[in-house]
Length: 214
Image 1 (cartoon, one colour):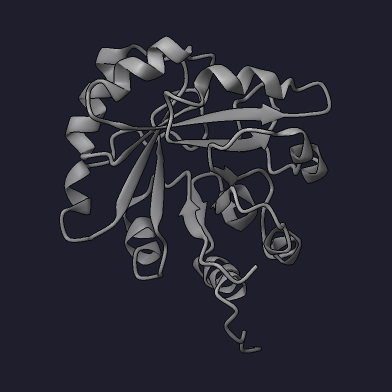
Image 2 (cartoon, helix red, strand yellow):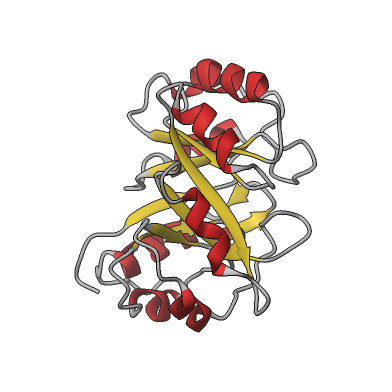
């Protein structure tokens, strides 16, 4: 795949780790505002982003509109990423606020791609992740061949268990609707704490740069 893919590193929550990550050429940082997630941002100070030119995606799971709007203002989120059972109407309400909306779906062999039709006009991008009760972050990869069933036009990010071990396979995907990769748990030392060397290695694979051995 020769075209440039968007790279999002999700699940960041520690200020020093974020500062190290943002020295690298990532396009989006993902911040999880779902309190049950082990990567929940907690009391992270929004001002740590003031010195960086980075696009921020806020991850929410079935949370009230008012709460999402509050976090969007506080962190100046560029994207609202929804991981729950949010309806097309809910997505439209966020769009009506002038916000960019991404909708995540957990994919397994039982997933009905037909449900995406109702969202195609009210979200900017889909995120296809591995189906899990925890709404993502499992570190598991779903069968990417299932995406052959997707017949819509809305672009998407590929997510779920992507790391240096399978990035080459991800980059071989021919679907032009796949506009980027969402990287998370396979590049971690612990939940919410990224291995910066591993992230750097992943980025070099994505950007087709040589990886030096140590």
